[in-house]
Image: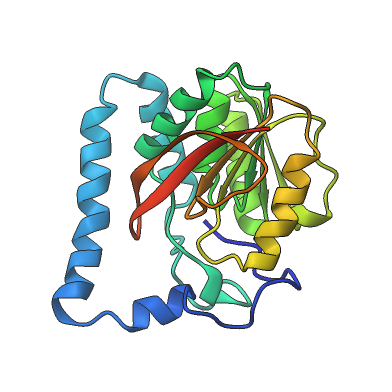
Length: 231
């Protein structure tokens, strides 16, 4: 996932900077971080082993992004806002919760990264849009969507500058977002039609929305709180 690092409401540097966090890891902590991600992927493979669409999605993402290092500090102008991804298993848990609330058909992923969340949502029947600042990743993710014939569209843009749909399921992991940016996102969500949903990671103090579920789920950099809200 890449957060909207160029947005003017983002701080130049704060305690959640990705490269700052990684630079602080030493010894066993650094080793644990490496094995955590690998163990998570292995468990995900086992848990979703009977899902043909999940196998195809993982295969096509691996094929399209072969040789691409998401943690390469030279690949973006501000690598400090680059984090890992939300695993497919976590995404599926959240989508299943959302589907119990009669969600809108539109799904918006704010900071789509390689597109895994967006593509998973499309695989589950949503009309999915992934918004991402990295042009190369947008192009690659779009090719995956086309090869898999999924209703997913990727846009290179700052999500705060786009025109949002009338109603949607909005997905965001706000780990590196400032309070100001969160308030701006919340303002956009509150303007959506009744019944729209917000699926938020690292953001459980949202005012003005009805919270239907909250819990902790794994991501590439650890375990974080998630919540599902309805307008």
